[in-house]
Amino acid sequence: MGTWVTFGGQISDEVAEQLMTIAYESGVNLFDTAEVYAAGKAEVILGNIIKKKGWRRSSLVITTKLYWGGKAETERGLSRKHIIEGLKGSLQRMQLEYVDVVFANRPDSNTPMEEIVRAMTYVINQGMSMYWGTSRWTAMEIMASVGAMTWSPLACGIITGKYENGIPESSRAAMKSYQWLKDKIVSEDGRKQQAKLKELSHIAEKLGCTLPQLAVAWCLRNEGVSSVLLGTSNAEQLTENLGAIQVLPKMTSHVVSDIDHILGNRPYSKKDYRS
View 1: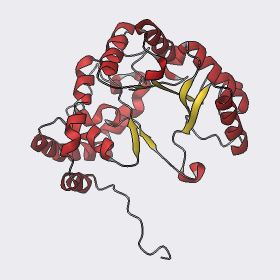
View 2: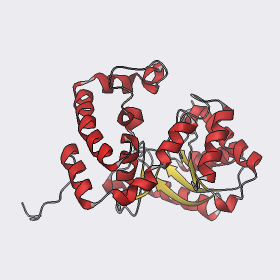
View 3: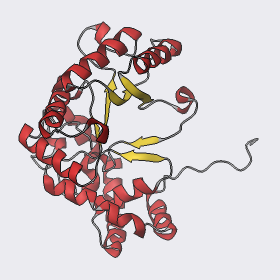
C-alpha cells in the first residue's frame, strides 16, 4: 500500500489509520513511503499507526525512498552523506530500527555509481535496511533487473474513469501541485487513453469486475512484477482494489492478449539481433 499524496495530504490521520488497518487485516503487508512525501509527514503518520496498532515488525514489509530530503543541496541526491543521513531521518520519523527496502528514488548523475552502491551497502551492513532497490533507473543503470514494483497501477486515478467527463474538484488532478496530471488528462494522448478505457471496460464487464480491479490484476499477472503499490483515499477504494485478487484467476492468456491488443504497448524483442 502506498502513501504518496494521501498520507499527510489528501486524507486525515484517522482515515490513514482506517485504511492501513483494513489493508493489514486483508493480508496486505507491504507499506511504502518516502522522505519527500508530505515533507516527511507521511513517514511520521505511518510510524505512529504501526506503533499504535502494535503490529509485529516481523509481519510488516516497510519501504521508503531517498533523493529529495530537504532544501539544502546536501539534503538531496544519492551522495553517501545523504543516503546515510536521509535514511537515519526516515527511521527516526517512523520510529523504526530498520526498513525492509530503501529505494534510490531517482538516478543521480552527479554521484559516482561506486559511491551510491557503497553507501547502500553500508546502511545494509549497519542494519538500517535489509535491502536496497531503484526507482526510475534505466536498464543500463540497473544492469540487471530481478524484480519490479509497479508504481501507480491506476495511472494516478485515470483508469478509474473519474476523469471521463472532466476534472472533479476533489480529485488529485484538481490540486495546484498536480497541474502536470491535469495537462496530461486533457491532452490529445489523454483523450486517446480515455478511448482505450472504454474498450477495456467491456472486458471488465465480461469478467464481472471493475476497471480498476482489471488494471491491478493485469499488473499482478506480470511475471516481472513483485508487488503493486496502491494509493487510496477511502475504505471503499481500498476494498475495491483488493478485489483484484479474485480477478487474477480469470486473467487467462486470451484475456491478457485482448488487453494487450487494446493497449498496443507490449514490447517485443527482435528475433534477429543483427538487424
